[in-house]
Image 1 (cartoon, rainbow, N blue to C red):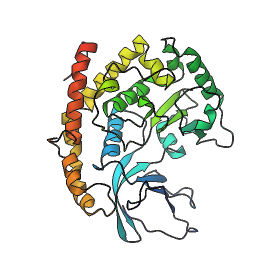
Image 2: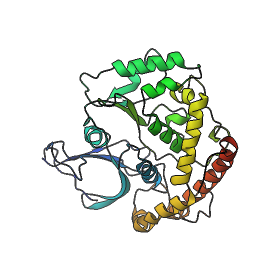
Image 3: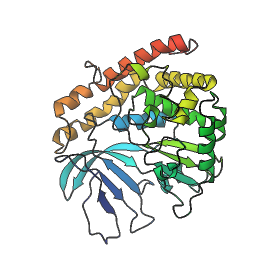
Length: 342
């Protein structure tokens, strides 16, 4: 992919630079194709995020996570890798992500995006008095319907500590939610709500099912090698004040069993050595783009080590998947003996 900066009053598109964490690295960018021509799109997508992968020296974290979600049937942004040229000069290899917006909702939900989409700014589902400032309406911005989300938050925080999470299924698409929890657990998505951070997700309530869907976002900080303590399958979601949604699900015996069954499903389908080796074939397509990238955060030898499909180094993607899947399968045989692995 390539593009040129054009005059702000052009009818084609605008490019907006997002914040960069440190001097010397390429900026993240947001590309809006329909800013001045509302019906303009590329393969049905009108807004793209170009992530500079500042925290991902393999260049593949987001690509792999969203591939997992695609195979698991989760409503999640489409992702690719893009060579970006600015004013004719190679700016580097970026993670290209579909924006979660009305176009995304229309493609993924039966109501055509007529419901309310919310983005967390630093919210962990706690019902503290000022919690509403921590979420931002992304559709129906001038008059969002807060009734359903306020009702859910109130019920959740009244029920927290009861050990009963059955009521959550009245509000959320639980099958999808459990799959996202499982992927976050296995990939060690340490800056996501599963591990106590209150950002990197959207929630959407569609007008047909009238249930919330949790939409995952921003996965550059994953595949963390730490394996002990709370990363075991008996992790109970921190504490009831950290994230009451996750705590409630993981402390209800029935839902905890379903969560573990979902982990079993993810291990058997997408989080295993065969799957990661297959997906790492993309390295052959991006190797030279990484080598030539003028603004990459890591080094090319580090990229080669991290993306080695044989996973000789334990810090590599394949080595990480091997270690975590072996550990998780061992725990699963003890905690859920009826879990079946091919």
